[in-house]
Length: 235
Image (spheres, rainbow, N blue to C red):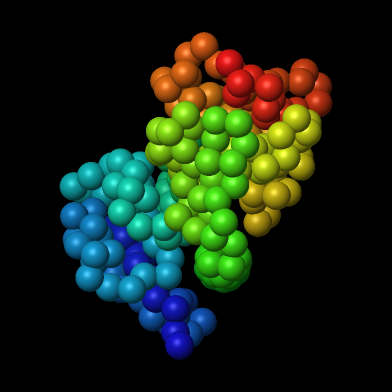
């Protein structure tokens, strides 16, 4: 069965080129120009991946990504002309899976699409076969629902935040370097940057602190990486 790509792009010339290239690769493409139309589409259609332009006329692509991720667990690739690193960090913080700047290689883009779709399928299949919740101190990981609860409060996590925190909790007290975390979480870690891990750790800590400001379970090991300290959860 053909995989379906939702393309959210308001520039017709770019959309036409992408649709042609995707159809050549045997993908079915649904094209919308507005963010609101994209939200309606994901409610009514079975989508496998979303290509999302940051500069839409009705809503900022970053805000739209937040709304999409709150509704469905789908891979999202940003399409943008912005090359500043700060934008990349913002994109990663809100749950984007990849980030491609214009102009881009259609061949490279379709390759990334294939990798992400396969990755999500593997994760979903693995989680279907692993439905027993994992408890560690004050944390509860439900791999079937892809949620983590912290002192009985379900955390609102992006995909990267969920995967990073899951690894740390399941391997409590073990120190993971940035490179190790990237190899576990990212499909193409060599194309990402070390600051991405630091950014996600920062936002995870912020979310944990809102629930229990007196507990600091994620420890920084300077020059080494990060670990989840199980003993902290007993406080």
